[in-house]
Length: 156
Image (cartoon, rainbow, N blue to C red; front, side, top):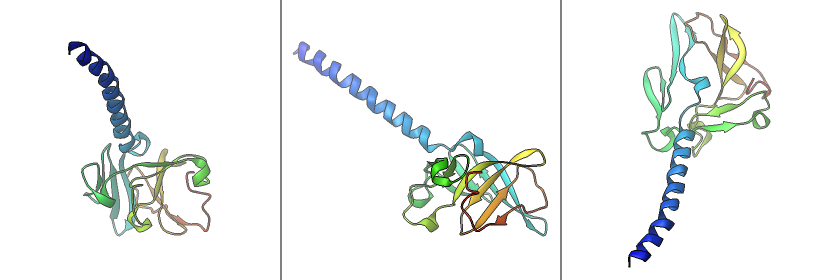
């Protein structure tokens, strides 16, 4: 009986290790990339700003918790990384809730651009057809967002 228990333990311990490693890898995939974390501002005119705060496990839009690891459905944070081949750009973009059922449930693709405003790189977002949102780290009273009839800027 003791011999059977030893064999069972020897078989189950590695299986438990594999399961634990799989869960850890999944948890890491759920956290937002460090490159896009922080508080980002977009000027909307009349001294008003659209604010996105991206933390490791949450995304706040104008101080409202929108996506989180603790939410469910379309509001559960699920990072989908898109390579430059998919995005047509020169880098990687991220969909913050890539586990969605319909496209309107996403917040669009985000990436840290090589373009700079006030000597700091900007966060870009492509959500609706031909509209690129640009967010800065500082409250700057100028909206850098633009329209372009091309997907070539995604990931740049």
